[in-house]
Length: 250
Ligand SMILES: [Zn+2]
Ligand SMILES: [Zn+2]
Image (tube, rainbow, N blue to C red):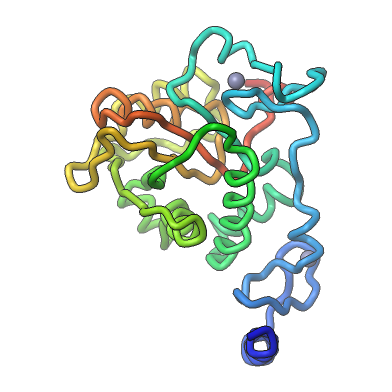
């Protein structure tokens, strides 16, 4: 099998030569994803302890276990657990932007692998029974050409053996959150989502999947909906990256 995979890689690389989106090196890997092994292994990870509940990086804290951010202390969260694979900066941010905006769809494979590792190693007492992707509006999907969060969720679902439930619909086209502060972001997404009638989450423990979490306004809106209208039992959130709010001025 190993010889077969190696041969498949080589044939793929010869037929579809491509270079790494980060360093430009020639890439040979089983998923034909444009990210070399060295860059994949060196993508940013959290350098600070993270909040026990929401995963926010907290410089100055001594350990993950007793570290809880001010928002979680104030009880302002609508999910039970949230984690990300690293900060939204450097190469990790470049790779996410290439994936979302520049059409490098096969980056979904290495990014989903990071999500799977983060979930498996840090989920603690929480166990998801399904995945729910943060939905894209139809118009945004047309503009972008694909639904990046659904792509991530589908690969992650096959890696973790969990079903993907499209339990939430985006019913209102919203302006991009970029450049808005925390309050504006919350207002921007209020009422933008509805629970879908097709995929029910009542009594389930969904893991909400997204690419980037910034202030958490989108995630909070969806989690509140999943809990209040969808009657989900426990809600977890997993994102590829997390904005470092202390650095970005939110
Ligand atoms: Zn590279
Ligand atoms: Zn927190």
